[in-house]
Image (cartoon, rainbow, N blue to C red; front, side):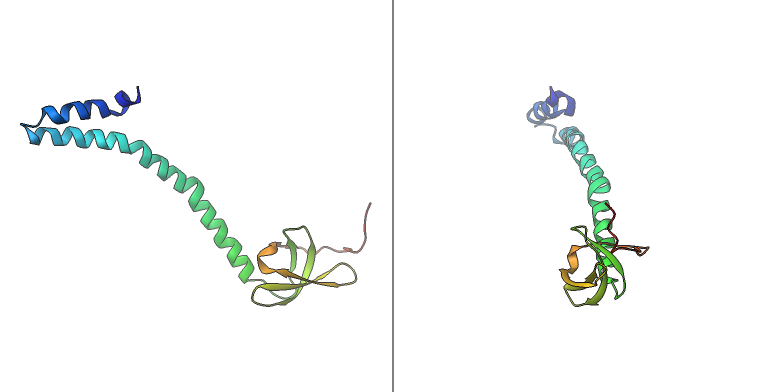
Length: 127
């Protein structure tokens, strides 16, 4: 069924019969090859624009955010811990957490995002 849709059967059937006239076989086989490969190429293009390109853009933004961390930034880790950056090294971030400024050390890649607004009364627990 799919053979007839993509023209594979007709291209294979015409190739041996056109042995005497080689000039006529080339356009038919090229057309069959194009019609066979076109859906695959379209799928690859769609995958690139819908999956690969947005992921690269997101990775670039995350890398830029991690490189722009500075002391005093309010961050959230991937574990859900909110803290204030008190120091930075190559691959580590030093945080102050809670109302008693408990020190923590986390990996730089573990920062989820930088908060735009600082959280006030973080020591007050509401139950």
